[in-house]
Length: 431
Image 1 (cartoon, rainbow, N blue to C red):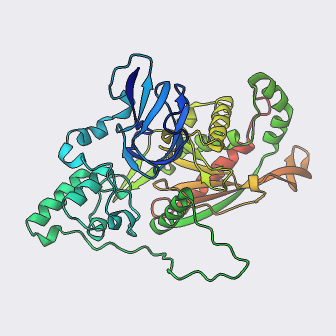
Image 2: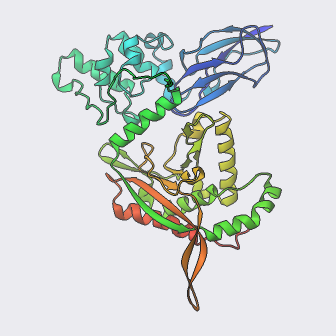
Image 3: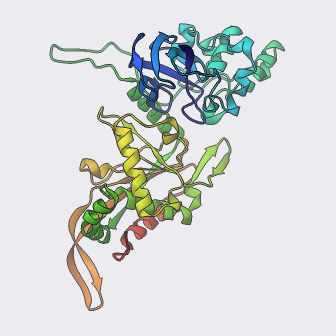
């Protein structure tokens, strides 16, 4: 028998730690290689972690609720197979090299952070390294919240901490952290008023995360929404005609979502300034067209997996991606990479019977499209012999965009172009 350490795996390009949610196995259990052993939560997604080796789970090193850095041992497995102890390539990325090279600071990465630092009202994400530096240097939660961050989404980096400590040691008030502007939307903290029939339900982790991000997005972006009605008749007729052949050929169904994503990807190529993000006083124009699609989970929460390089896929390719991501989302099988890198998002509110909506922009994107329900309506149709009234399949598109960087002309023309691509769908398109 040989002992092997099971390490906290890397679950995404920007993920450097995870929180142990639940151990699915207990000490002494026999496990197979690739069998799910525990559930881990990151700031992107909750996912199951498979065993790296088969054998006996002899020791659990990280308990439920612990925040563990990528590459840290979380369990010991006794296995009959000879093993070589090494850190998997996927467990450490160049972004974590600074953590590996700073043992004096990383000794307490997995240790519990002082309650004040862990529970204060600052909603920013702090890496284990930043938390460790703050603890070692005696930086309070309030002081930490006022340190300006240069990282993605305003996150505080190691260099930000070092620069701040250098300025603090010099007693330079010009470099002291500025007072943080309080959010424009606040929730008064009052004791809940309950009657005999009321039920007080605590938000789960994902709902808390969604709530925080939605409020933050409304604070950051100047939301404006434009509406367009699209004629979906050609797509409805094509799908009705081909759905059985599609299922027989590919072994799965085809929904309307691939058509929406295809039209959005084409429109983004026409209007690339929708495919941007705001970086301080600069606009970052994205090269890749990565479209997120909101998926409702059995719990009632929403998650947004991303179809990477959607403009390079045909309808069949997009459909396969949509089905795969939606199925894995509903079965809690998404990885962190599946929900990162989005540059534009589509939300199908029509699947709930809604005809339109005003969605909130997922940061740091600058726009999101809500797809309404497809309904039959009488409409004026132009023909070579004159106008006629006909029954058509109509649908509203609701385009919310960040008015800081997207003006009404661009926001309106973009959603109109999406509708044009949907209306012009070729009925002779082959499977």
